[in-house]
Image 1 (cartoon, rainbow, N blue to C red):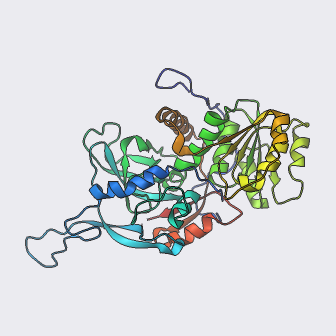
Image 2 (image 1 turned 90 degrees about the vertical axis):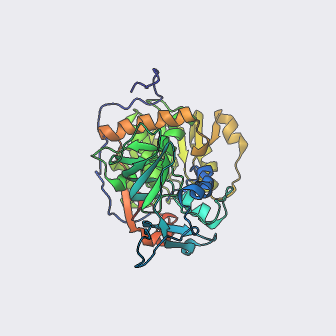
Image 3 (image 1 turned 180 degrees about the vertical axis):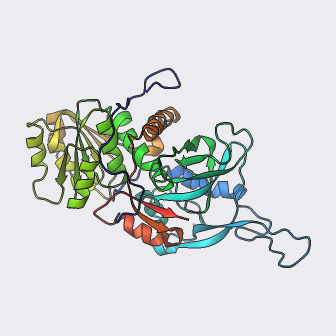
Length: 396
């Protein structure tokens, strides 16, 4: 796919469809310790709200004027608000004033909001960057453009879009976004699927092509392939001509991985399962490993690598001890990543490729479970449970 800047992207998606599910949602169950959000944007949410959510009488007040002539009632929406860090139950559904776009901004009527593991880290207060309280969680959303601010030229009211980041939070009936965070949502992609695009597909693309520099013909192990990022990585790697091995903890999850185009699916709860990788690859091992839980798997990953192999750490929930000789003997590279660290140019490239894949149908997000917006606490419990199956989304 040619770049609009006159050069080739790292990924050229071939012209064949990905096998498997054409998911529009309503399946069951929620993984991925993906910390690759844009926490700085979430931290800016408080500053954005100072402009977008400000009212004459304070944060959540509005001019009711009940029955009083000449008093205008300000429109309100529903939003999840976090007023203290803690367990999922600190999230409450509240009234909030309708959002208004500033210059270069877009207000989205949210039809679905994606739930990512990083949302739970931020809510707990245990993340390196803490959002200013109170705040509305979430960065991924899909819906209809409701209004645009001055100098917005790339999108108009009424357009179907997905958002890869918000200023106001996405767990709400409306979301405020910078224009460059809003992308076209094709008619063949549902709103629930659109809410599963931003962080999962951005993370998978960044890990595969901009960190690991994965190439057609290489062997890719997606270690934890049944959640949002894992499914995206399988689809992207397969579409780019790689040989893909994914792992999952349930038979249902492994069937899902195979349905998305993986050549093989391994049970990562089975003792010695990575020994099968050597058998499947004729002793070669994996050229690239996309790792969702490095604190558990990194040491094993190093032993499963091919010579000059690369491991990209997408997620980790603790410390890990490794034997450096396993890296030395393979001339291995261990690469960390946060999507937050992608440059503006890298972001433009990855979204150009993702948008083309969605339009053509070669990328198809899988929604595992939908919750009403009011059940955001249950969604946060679900996204951290083992045995992931597709993406979890909230429906306002």
